[in-house]
Length: 258
Length: 264
Image 1 (cartoon, one colour):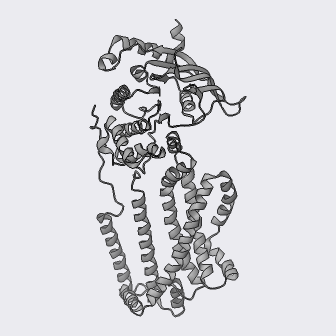
Image 2 (tube, chains in turn green, red; image 1 turned 180 degrees about the horizontal axis):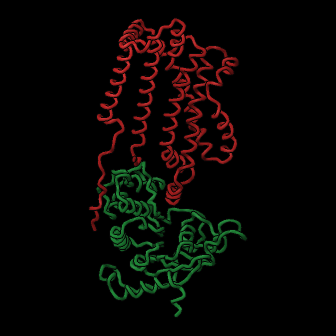
Image 3 (cartoon, rainbow over the protein chains, first blue to last red; image 1 turned 30 degrees about the horizontal axis):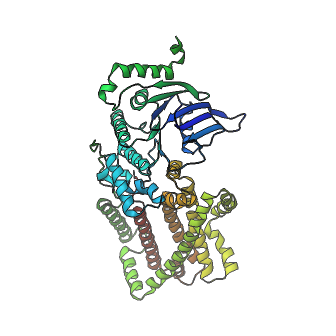
């Protein structure tokens, strides 16, 4: 095994009392390589958000370990950027001030902050909206702003919790391409939670399929498709084949054995 | 890659006090005064006519009494309201942020909240004397209670995702408090100020009716003794206008401070 960026070692999370609580995730073992895009799919209750929040440091493990760069996660930190489904932009700050939020906390001076914020806003195509307030942006633009905000603090890991789930299909496809585009210019390790099988296959190196009740690892599907991904890839028979495999793993666990 | 064509087309922000609304309000008032005038000239009522009230208002304004009364009432409201709000906001933050503070303070707030401030007046007069202190105290109480409850509500209802978003960007508790909790709860606090100012104004008039030697409420009470209906009306109109102006000022402050909010 080469160096892994994120490792789950028998990671288990129980909500409530250890004996009577709900087991959200049971004995997860998983390694995510540096610079890899991994998507996590599974039915609701499979613990996919729980797994991500443990990497983010927003939840602690009940037993087992979650390691980032070989060190146990002790809490949230700017080395791990998180993108939430509900965008979570601060509505009282402008687009640029939102992107600068993390930089300000690092003590970066005003001019440098602004330059960096504008750079990342440019990367997501929002440079001309830097002085707008979030309320004037569409859902897709808000999420791009959130991506720029996460990127700006230069995390080595990006954790995305169904980031495009609230968007319409067209915007979602556009943002998937843009995420890959941004990633190819500035490679980070990405852990991406989704319930959309097409999305999971399209952007990933590997798709992790989890099963529910209790949340556990079901299958890991290698996505052996070339980068850059584009419409040709999306419409290729190879894509369809992998997509079908993931689909069966998620929805028809029994049929897959046949 | 350029993605700039999915701009949200929003109409100009709707103003609560657009000229159109203003025109309607003016028409409505004019209609009301018209009906009042008809009722008095038609002999349907013993009320003074709008004209008599206006004449008295000018008289009282010219000899300075109206201003003295207004000043006395406003002074009590402002001192009580400012004191109440200044103490309420940190108390509300404390209650929202620390569980123990909430458990200790909340029962007292809930207890005093169900007592009308006016019911405190007899006690306040007996213990604090008949000068300004008891009046300011009950106004303080009225303003404090509404602002403390809404500040506390504002803090506990801050969206947890904002806090998580700040935390993963490297914010500690102090930063989360000053840069997330305070701005996110501002709309709630301002609503509390608005309600607090309303109840402060209601309380001052009532307090002056009971025990005072000056103020708009006191003037009404005096006029009642002499069956001086126009003066009672002048006080009522002045109270209404001042209350309306104060409310507008808070609404403007609210719109200015929370312009970033999505409004329906």
